Image 1 (tube, one colour):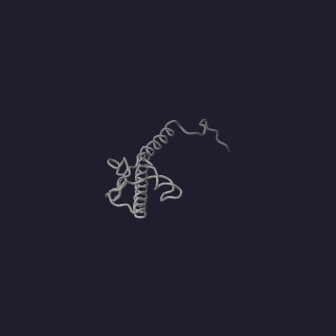
Image 2 (tube, helix red, strand yellow):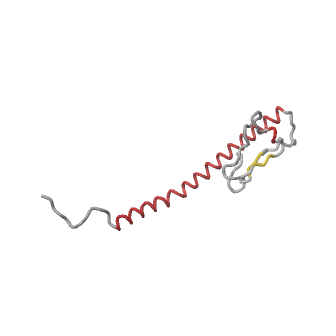
Image 3 (tube, helix red, strand yellow):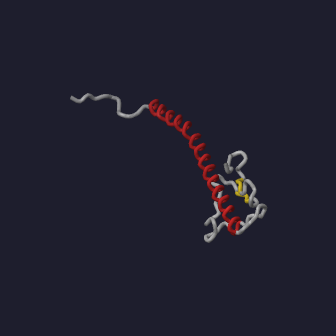
Length: 120
């Protein structure tokens, strides 16, 4: 025997509001963590680029018999036939500055101060 009920199947407004509130709470927790993880990965990629450029400068200086204090010729570092195929860029939008051969930091990022884009 079939029982007819005046109520139709579906969700009430309160149930939908509870689900939306739970989704909003989860988003409020997840979005800041996502932004922090993105900044950390950009910093790590920048540091990897700095290590690659520093190694290329050291190799270039050794092969070209440069001494401490010589300026770095970036046209000899980057290119298909040179030490690094394409000039790397900071993923966070910083710019790289090349210093003289033999100084403790031969290349640095413009975001090195407050965001930690520095060689260890």
